[in-house]
Image (cartoon, rainbow over all chains, first blue to last red; front, side):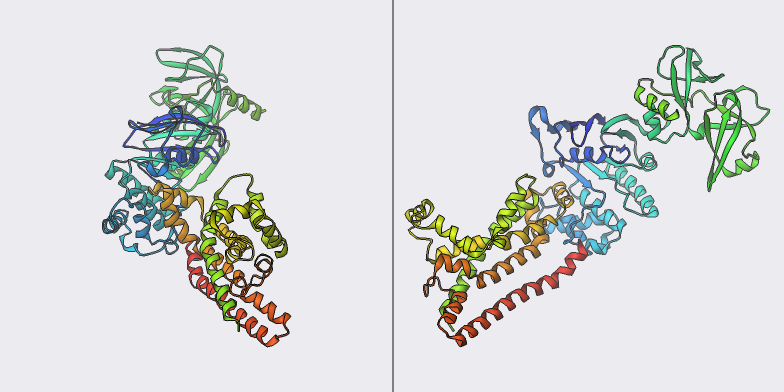
Length: 374
Length: 225
């Protein structure tokens, strides 16, 4: 496991989490959440007041034991947001700079090999100012891989690149990670990027871990209101906890009863937040029975339709639900097939498995949300 | 033409350069990277010779390194030389008045080497010394060259402090600029003019050569940063 415990005042950090070795993990959070600081602390570029960083059984930093291994002695590669290529060296010399432990002749051969791996062997003699953003990123990646690091750290590796280059390089990173079976930890503010690449996700906000877990699970089931917001869950509503039985947890949402398959325990009449992904809210035909395999069927009224190229976002208010808006994502074709427009009456299905109850212990945010609603 | 004086000026410039450049590199690099709160005071101290009249610097050197001062006595007892009215004294004075010319350009050059490159070098497995020699120095060399050119040019033309500390002893402390002053005092404008022209030419060539090298290598560096 890659084990990271960090505490620091400025920048404010308080994280304690483990990540599996040999996989691609991502730290996601908004600007100023401390993502880069975590990465720099793991690299040994930032020394925090309290820390314990270990990779497998190899301890890299332990303030309790007054031990700190400097960055140049840690077996890792690091690619920063702007790549940090040495401007006075050619591409191949940049890679050679990471191979000072080898003899000069071996150095050049190995550096050339690394450039070949990332697909820019032909640009070996170019200086950084003669390389495009994508090419610079590859040189930085080749340099980071040159020492055969046990851990590869990437700080917003694709943020300085254009959309198509970014997409191409994401695929290549995935391919490279699969081929080398390396542990990769990258930070990004782009949730889609993290979702696409990572197997494990850590959500960070204000220097604290909000939620952590396998990416698929985490993207489906945020545990708190804050996590749901960070992951751009467009549907966030409040309901009363009624009780639970074998079929799941029953909630009262306005005058409507909903069932959630699982969730945190609470007391009857307690207010609880719940969420559902826009892609998990289904539109059903008028003659559909009220209970079906699709979940609870509810009548609703369309209040807004926004078409956005390959998808459409439809906002509805479920009858007798108390007026909170639910959003669902449709293909434009479905939009026209159902003749949807503002004011249309529809039926939607909410499946118990798709309804995610959020931890009531996240009280501060609940209070903030209540304030903002007022 | 006083060739002895010219030879002494060259010797003084060479000794100053050889001794001062390492001091300039170490101090300039340290000032560029240090977080100490005393930095403005230290910078002000090193820049003092730029704003103080040479006579003031010379006066304090005489006071603190004279044979009756503790420092003067110490140097005399350990090295057997006096720093007043002697060539070693001229070198020490020259080093002190040239501190800003050797430190400031180097400091600016090291400040321009971004922390990101330091981080990248550390993550490449480079020790701090390797980072200094392989990354920082190659990027900061225009600043070091500027410092060398300015120090050389300034030493060749230094007058006030040299006169205060060294006086005007032929073959010992009479540099070319002192010799020019001496010839003017002796109503020998022809010799003074010849030496002044020669000094002007040497200084111009030195500075022009320095700028020439910077110009040729400068754009490449600028493009690549």
